[in-house]
Image (tube, rainbow, N blue to C red; front, side, top):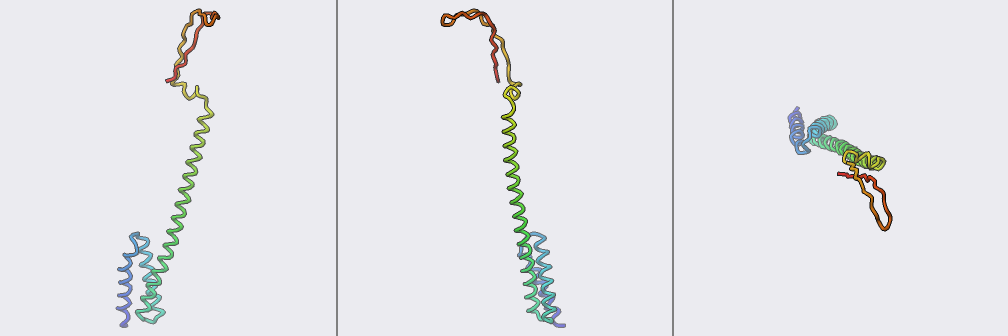
Length: 142
């Protein structure tokens, strides 16, 4: 029965020292559960030996940290894959916009900013050639 207070103290110490592991609630809860589970298993396998309980708590925290590192790596890889997919989609959209702009004629695109002025031209002579009176259309694009 004397090992009960030592066992409780080791579990309490693991829970208190677990705050140094990180600030995320998942990490704190996971490490606390790993330490407590490891301490219980160490206590059971060591038949009440506090050293075995402490080693079990350490092994539980180590296992919890290993699992969380794997999860963080998978999450980081997933984020990078999504980021690269987003960049690829953006490049494809920009390419499509450029293709669509080249397909449309300039008159369609600039019809809003185009004004036509009809200018009457009198009879005139240029290099010995006589031109009849006519009308010229000026396209003014703003």
